[in-house]
Length: 313
Ligand code: CP
View 1 (cartoon, rainbow, N blue to C red):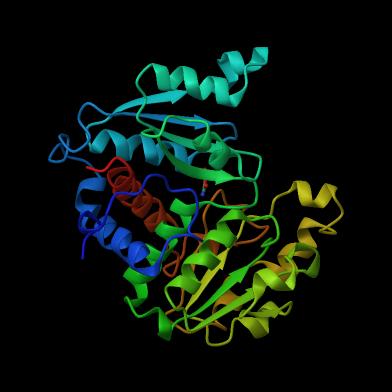
View 2 (cartoon, rainbow, N blue to C red):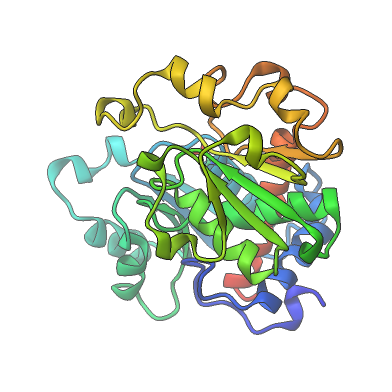
């Protein structure tokens, strides 16, 4: 089934409300769109005449750029709104900013915000026919990252997630990526989900229900099919949640010795930006088991699929 067989999505705010068949359909659609993600003009009519605005209140390299590329590949007009040079610096609210851009004919907003729930709140204040895609809000959701991670796993390991043991490592507590990955892995029926990190960086037990949780990374790597590394948010050191970067790498950094404890065909994912030498060694980040750049390419295809789904084309 391709996503086109399903009713359009009004918005994509999180993966927690998306049924498994919708997630699978978006992955199917993204896989089919992959040949077009790297270039070409074949799909320029799909969103011709539609306008997509990227509205990022936090920095981004991958998400913002890949939404831009995805929208252009589908023929949309793209407005990359620059928050730093906008009238938000004079105190204009995010809602007023959105309404003014909406009045210029924006059909879909791709929004990143620091506050949990901020993208959903903007969607509630918009016209009924304006669409929103959450590009990351607070610690809550990063749905397109979750989808591109699932596509990358599926390409490496096949569609039967029930056979997979997946390990998520690092600062799960503050990670919207980890939360979206957990929603997606559960929806797709992952065989075993493991979570490893210092107790100061793990969320409460309710969020990790059904996961095998541990602090000994060497032990947790045994028999793993995929390792999903997370960025250590350096501000956590200032909060005293991590004693030192060296100590973090010693206990939770993925190097070649550690990776050899996983299955020989295990793959390594990281959402970026990577802190090399803090959570991941160069030899792993750039090694044969790394799927980091494949994730980025998949991100364009996933975002093409999502824009097509929300804009109903
Ligand atoms: N993975 C991710 O969200 O990267 P950016 O912050 O660069 O968009």
